[in-house]
Image (cartoon, rainbow, N blue to C red; front, side):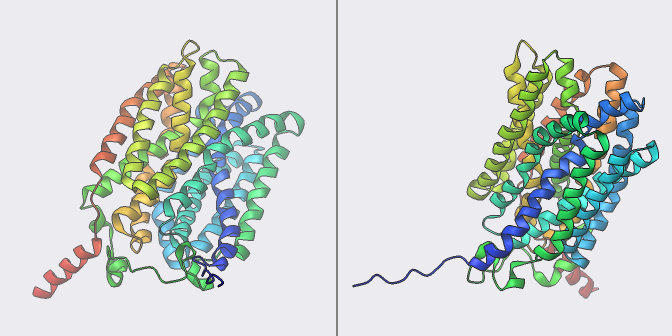
Length: 433
């Protein structure tokens, strides 16, 4: 007697449409930290030697761009709601490449400033739209899906920085940077053809499920559009969320762009500095991916506390590691690599965990406005203290208590909240009046 045929549990159509989009999400995440920050490893020494600019002059456009980008974060979130995450993703990825062209040209300080200043602004829109799309396409796999996408961010530091350094010698500054800019621009244009807003648009459900998942009970869908700033920030979770991921993102701007300077300052050889960079990239990427798996298996809050703990210990290793104690550097860079990947991963995942999938786009635009305040000051913080003291010891030392605050925030950020319940309460009060 023949065995009964096994029915498929996932839709092939889901993977047919998801995989091409996923490749573009990976490209965006791969180049995001390079253009926004990490290229300073190459741009800073090159511009100081070729143009005679100071470290603060080179970094200032990026700092100014991050400050301008704070209120624009709310704009990007609103555009995602009004236009859809797909359009914002494709447009921002295309523009991300085009503004890198200005950095490649850099014939004068004005052109360089516009390009380098615009990149963190556009990069915020790229991140927000990417995570919104992933939130649409995944549910039970959300943490792992985010972990896979974001784990390429630390990997890019070793691979692309090495390419840039070698390209300066073999091809020259413009050609080296222009090639990278074109890869990103073309990827953005392809997105208009390959990306879909939701799996439902192609007749399937999140995670490729063949049946409609059970409805989410954390939010009343009728009132989600009424969520405002006041509903969100009357609860401590919103403030703790902004501090947690603001400090983690602050580290993303403080550390990787100055790795070469720091390792040289400590007396490591170029070969050792390269080894550290590869360790940061690939071991950190693995840790980032693990955080996504922990997110799905053990919970978002536990994954966040774990990564914040490693971040705190890693800042100690990066400050007190030396030629005599290289193991502390190794621990620090791997922990930091995990945070560089995991913080963009856990930020949207925690927002969904606390406020629900239906409320995500509404609350995420407000939360990210707060999250990006601290990173806007990171470049000025690092280069200012570096120019003042002639060393990175002081900014690295201050990162230890800063990361301690981050860890405490993750511990106290624990409630799930239905913001639409607050709205319903407000409506009842108004009705009585």
